[in-house]
Image (cartoon, rainbow, N blue to C red; front, side, top):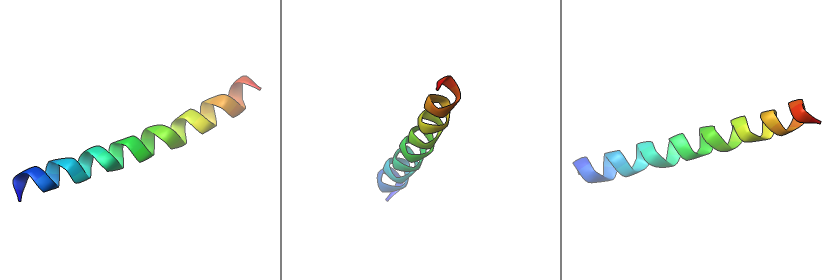
Length: 29
């Protein structure tokens, strides 16, 4: 179960990173 928990955290981090990328793109526009 410990491994599953770590994987879940990785997914969340990826999602958060994607959102920031979108914001950055708007700023450069």
